[in-house]
Image (cartoon, helix red, strand yellow):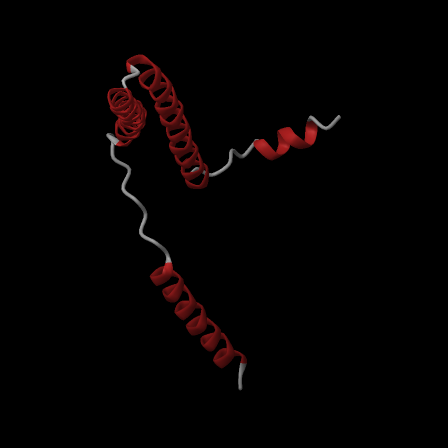
Length: 117
């Protein structure tokens, strides 16, 4: 085999590898201008739904047992806490997704090396 044949085979192999990589990459998500608003509304809905579900269950238990304010207040506060927890989890998921999508800054490595002292 000559050098030319080897080079042609390597080029063909490189083209095949590039084609396979391109077919296995997930399509890039289109960034629309409403995405931040959608995330904000998602968080608001999670918070309000946790609050509403807690209040509804608390009111139902108070009517059932005849102790009107106790379960309503307790489960409303628990629903609020659950809504906050869910909202923070969604924010963390969004933060992780944007960290993977954005490339690191070029000066970040140099700043870390020089700050070591």
